[in-house]
Length: 112
Length: 111
Image 1 (cartoon, chains in turn green, cyan):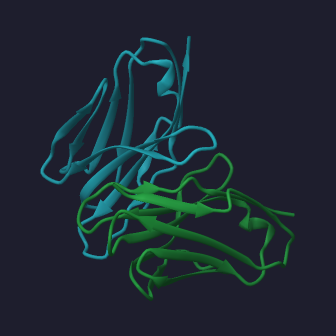
Image 2 (image 1 turned 135 degrees about the vertical axis):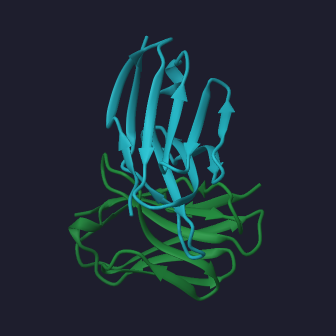
């Protein structure tokens, strides 16, 4: 079964600082990878989606970007964080076809 | 297009039943259901596929009416452990369609 490793678990960053969140997947090859964001008490907003190395689909225009340098590695970045970037960031993975999403434990980001 | 979930929140006493609804404005290929405890990642409950079906998982079951583009999650004889936020995620018929989640339904079970 798939295991999603996501770090760090919590992060406090000042406005204007850069961001790098990393996610790695074990137990499957060529997964579909996702970054979701959840604001406090809100739903799951899809940010980025990837079906393969270097293939990134952006769902919401913002100051965040994503990269997939390896098959099972997905990175979320920002050059300058905004207060509105605060939230709970979740990396998820699924296999080709109809399959459940497996989520990492998430990163709680607070921008101060 | 984000699916619409109802109700937004519900409070039950242990042993009572609940129904959570999810509807979409576009044709669906699949509907996913997840439960999230506070501060934790969502946990997969079940997937329902186009073709109209029902699935069960312990005392939690779901139905999918593809003609109405609706799914319902049924929680029978609720337990304290059922508390959390329930999300439906929908996937369209397009090859590039991704799983889009509704805003969630908060369920609180009282002893």
